[in-house]
Length: 113
Length: 114
Image 1 (cartoon, rainbow over the protein chains, first blue to last red):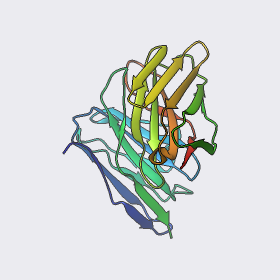
Image 2 (cartoon, rainbow over the protein chains, first blue to last red; image 1 turned 180 degrees about the vertical axis):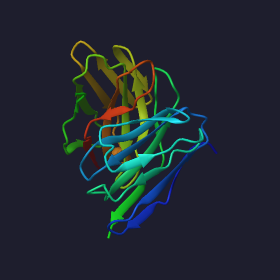
Image 3 (cartoon, one colour; image 1 turned 90 degrees about the horizontal axis):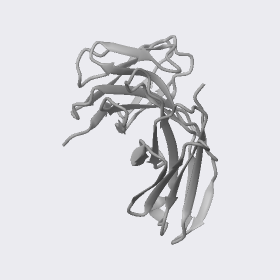
Image 4 (cartoon, rainbow over the protein chains, first blue to last red; image 1 turned 30 degrees about the vertical axis):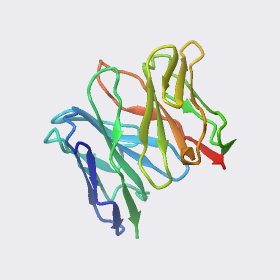
């Protein structure tokens, strides 16, 4: 069954902790993305990667880090430098090219306690 | 700065009627346009993509694009209560031929009244 898997579904973080959100895809897509969604807001791009071992900052990269060591995997670390990390985090992937339909995982809801 | 604007709603439509959702975008270099449906607490689901001016139909859904007016719309015919959701408009501006991510509007909350 092809798709994008995010884990965990819910995550609780204490103040000052780093946490890593997992995103795995078996669609053979080259490009992967991380978005953040706050209540009543659209999606905002955090980081994206067009190819293995390369990634670019999106609009709100401060306080986040990523790696892309494998085509299938694009984990996101929310660091203690992120001032307001409570949000719904969405991972997506797409093929390269101009008709870049992006497909999303089921999301991870992160709450700071 | 790339911007995508949508009326947040809620937009209330009687069951069986046509729901019309609108979106405008600021970047004239935009190449690809997408509509996503998002149910409360769930992730967005792609329902339509459109790349050239005109209409594109898929079942009860029709996407309309007017690049001169920087306007894209989604029509839902024979609206059903299950269509009640937030509809996100997304736009892609290519850079260097690669996929550098979509810019999303804040979404329109659609309510289909039985």
